[in-house]
Length: 306
Length: 221
Image 1: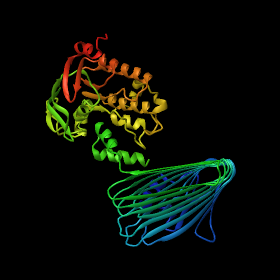
Image 2 (image 1 turned 180 degrees about the vertical axis):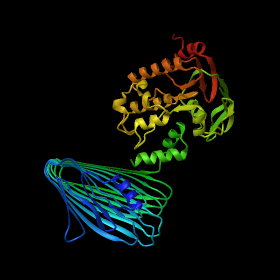
Image 3 (image 1 turned 90 degrees about the horizontal axis):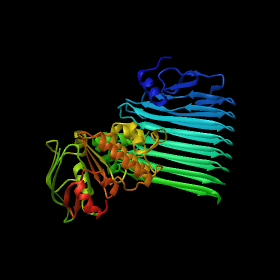
Image 4 (image 1 turned 90 degrees about the vertical axis):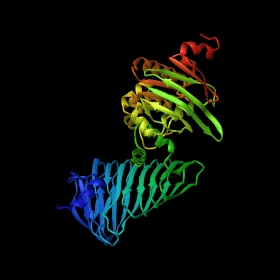
């Protein structure tokens, strides 16, 4: 498999891959699969009706990772990709996705990734998704991920979703349905700059004794705009918490629209939101330790988005 | 090492510091005390460059640092422990102490590194824990002049015992480094070599602790 330097950079940044991984993987480059491998427990099959994959994880699979990074390195591509994950009972797996667009041309390049997860009982699933835009062309780098999860009884899904830099426009939609005693933890990190726009929407339906914890941290710079909307629905006895923290710099703007929908008196739902510039005392404290204001600002932002 | 000449700070027409001057020699351990609103914390913040004086000069190690930034003063060898500890979403205790220069200093303020180094500096830590970490950042600097602004504020009794021990140890270990502590606490005043009383922005007595302490304590020994 020969990959261009741009694609190698993207795979390194979005999936931390510097070589072919040992387990199951699928590498998608410019709309085509350029490398695929299944493992004994994880079977990757291409969809026959639409573009995308079906990934079957056998019941009882433990400590395995599947990588499915996507790279676009040409201008003018628009793709819609459907990936379905079927996770068998009692599995403990990590799924590393992520997409990077390297666009040096004048036309937009767009990746719309629709990921659906069907998680069985007693599972632990970690999902890592990083998005990145590179290249100095006038064409947009557009990434629109949709993530839908059915989390089975007594299972736990942990989602780490990051947009690192360079993505001109994104609409991120995450929906989850949690069965009895299921848990979902979502860590979202978003950085926008220039004229970029980002929208992130969550809809979480909580079943009996299930829990959700959404923690979104965002930095908006220059004249970029962000919108965060979350809705946690408590249908029965359950616990839900969402926090949206955003740092605003220059003339950027962030709109937070949290919603809690408690349909049972036993649903305990909490939302916290804080938007503002970097606190002056944080900068002064780091300066008192010998950092310049620029170094202090960089430390604070990097730490915040970690 | 520190020479303050005619320092004045005025805000909204009110003189917070009124033409104060004093010298501090290397190896000094000075406690500045006085009633609330007397200008103690303002003086500390002016020394660190957080506030700018309306008039006067600050000479540190022979350099006029009156217009120096906080960063420049830190690089020259000044350290500062804030009265209100700063919280950081995203920075861990270890990261902050590494920036300060020594992540191994935590036991000096009575905190177990295994339990605390990986913690984020946010509201999950109590006010007392944050305060001890704040003090640790100043100790970690090993600065020529370390300023503690009301280190006892917001700290529990056990931590206060540890704190006075830390200051006593700091005093024993310091060679040419100097310490200024803003404090009302008798036990901290008793560690001092020198005491300065500020009242309404003016220095009242300033001198050897053994001479001034009886005046403050009103006959207590």
